[in-house]
Image 1 (cartoon, helix red, strand yellow):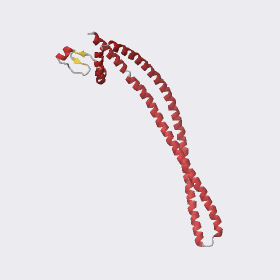
Image 2: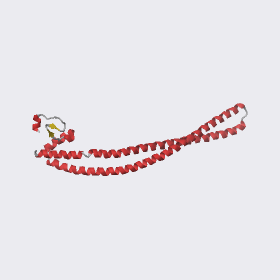
Image 3: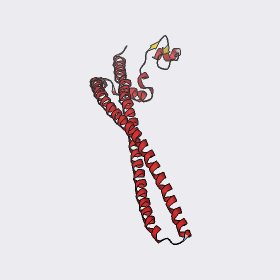
Image 4: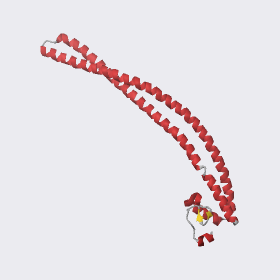
Length: 214
């Protein structure tokens, strides 16, 4: 086996070693992403509950303002009662009072209903908030662990890149250029063994002429 081929094989093996870290880095990133996804979901639930509670509080406030106005209307009607002189006026005032009382009943029922909903949602809000806190603690721990893992990988890759530079300098530039071009599309199968007249990159049998050239 000639010198250039030996150097090329060594360079190819070094490149394979560099690329072998890619799945580990991807797995580490996925580990962090999984926890982040859980945090995002929990935070989304928390935000949704907060918005719903705020909306209900605004509705309660609206009904309370309506009750104030209706109470004022009933007080005013009580004063008008003294000045009524006809049955028609009495019926109109009575109808007004009935409508006002119905509205007050509805407003009170809605206030009670909305406050009940908010009581439940506030309990869920506390749970969601606690969940976000717990997941954030988990995320920080996992992120720290993954950062250390990735730093170790990058250190190992750095050493391999230094070795690659050295191997590339020693390799004939025409051979290196040809290898780099093939590697763009062939990846780590740019340099593969040939056994029993078969290519172990494409798994095809080589004809006698090609095999003798190899």
